[in-house]
Amino acid sequence: MLQALGVMAVSALLLSAAVYRFERWRLARPGGPFAPVDFTGIIVLVSTAAGWILWSRNADPAQADKLMWLWMSAMLVFIVGAITDTPRPVRGLRPLATVIAAIMLHHAGIAVTTVKLPFSDSFVALGSFSIIVSVVWLCICGPTFSRVGSIPRLSLGITAQTCLAFLAIDILVPSHTAPVSVMVAASIALICLAQLPYTRYLIYGNATAGAYMFGVLIGAIAIEGALKHTAFLVAILPLLAISVPLFAMAYTAAADWIRGERRDFWSHTHYHLHEVLMQQGYSHRQVGIVILLGHAIICTHAVVLATLIHISFLVKLIVLIEGLLVALVVTYVALRLMKPAHPPTPHDEYDLLGVRIHRVTMKQAMQRVSEFITPGTPHIVVTTDAAGIIRANKDPQMREIINNADLVTADGAGVVLSARLLNLGIDTRVAGCDMVSEICKVAAGMGRSVYLLGAAPGVADKAAENLVRQTPGLQIAGIRDGYFAPEEEPHIIADIRAAAPAALFVALGAPRQEEWIVQHMDELGVPVCIGIGGSFDVISGLKPRAPIWMQRCGMEWLYRAIREPSRIPRLSALPLILWLPVNELVSATGGSPPPQAPGGAPPDQDPESHPSRDNTR
Ligand code: UDP
Image 1 (cartoon, protein in one colour):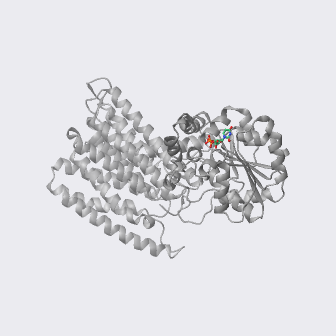
Image 2 (image 1 turned 90 degrees about the vertical axis):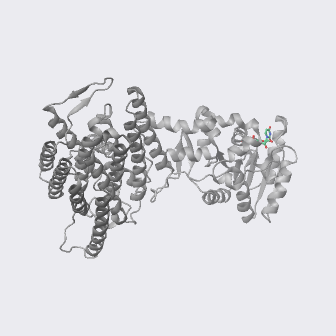
Image 3 (image 1 turned 90 degrees about the horizontal axis):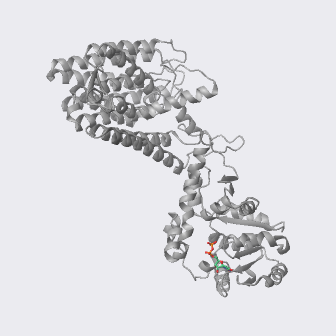
């Protein structure tokens, strides 16, 4: 067998390299005489022919016979698939070819003959229904796999993963071992992997014939290997292994139905799920990675399920559901944490759980601050963390303050992560503590002063010293601690107004500082008023700030919680801010797409940026 596999691998590599050269040559001559051809299918047929003939010489004649019928039915499906790989295919040809292939395979003994019912040890012989079940099964596998045929690299990757899963089942569960199934699974996986380095140029055109043939071959080895002896897994296991294309097919069908469109599922090359992700700005490579990741998780669960032969039905069901959920969550989270290669033109502001946040980097935030200072009218800047969002989510007054603020920045890893999960396009944290130094630089650059209000007596003075050291030329218009009686307020307000600073830092703790600013903003007349929580404590050196690496990893909250255990109750906002988006997605009808700026389609510069149904795979 090893010799046969070696021959297949070498021939697949050589053929792929030759096709690669040819396709590069063809591409350099647009409008040339050569029509696009599905070379993957040809490479598989040629390589398997060579390897299987070699294997058959030493194999049991019955097995060699099966392999021959399998190859012939694969060739039939491929040829008919290639003929129908046109924009206007002849309807019914592919189903007909699949039915004929199923009959050929049935004749060779590759058929579903018995079924074991769940919760029971007895097998039910299908008798003459066997042919019907086999036909139906192959009719599911072929078109389902052809769904991924038009997507660059995915068809080969998914096929290789599926075949490796079947191979693992064959090897790990000796009672399933069927030599033909092992041979086919190993050779298809190997040939697909051998072609991967060349996929960029391998196939052009709407070619799905190869993927269609893979579907039929995989359906056949499922019947021959895993399917034959597996009780509960009779249908579930192979369905699991092709769940990604199945899901995509269901998604396409649902999307078409909602739009009132009708398509021929046997021939068209539309892969809706992939396209939707591409429209969100993800590249082929990113979408491919995510889909293959989800598929790998599901395939691993399929293998685990196959090994759980003697475990109760309920446990198997739990493993099955867990596998699907894990794959769904992991792929969703991976997608959301990934930065789209071509992000849509972003909106200025986003709504996170009913709270408005501006999508700004520190540089853009400072640009806005200088725009606030120039006209001199009062503005409020809010930096909000997870606790602030949760508070505003529950407290209408606080929500109103934030939603009416002139600039709201995401201050906290929880907010950024939550925004990423909701695909809101906010991926930078603009922390209040950092804003203090930056605003000082802007004010100094404009020849203006700042006023420090808040924190314990002496702390703001020390913070002011440090700020002046950091920003030479900075003028301090005034300093006042944050422990004052209500009757002192008019005096403090008058002092600030008389000092006429460009910016007022208010460190009274949230939400009091924001409420105080809103209450007195007009009297104060300061262009930029910002609540900065415990920033003076940090800037003055009273409290250390988390190391840079912790800030970069979004772990500053952990550092503060360790240094100040009294802050631990506030951490309850973190799981909430991550849970609420999930809740929002579930309660929304299918989740809302990310907001698109008017005319904000992703730029189309990279040849990989769009799922080209007509030129790449
Ligand atoms: N503070 C104040 N007056 C008060 C209560 C608090 O000046 O009546 C100060 C306190 O000294 C601290 C800041 O407000 O410097 C609040 O810091 P904390 O870290 O609690 O606020 P957060 O950053 O969480 O909003």
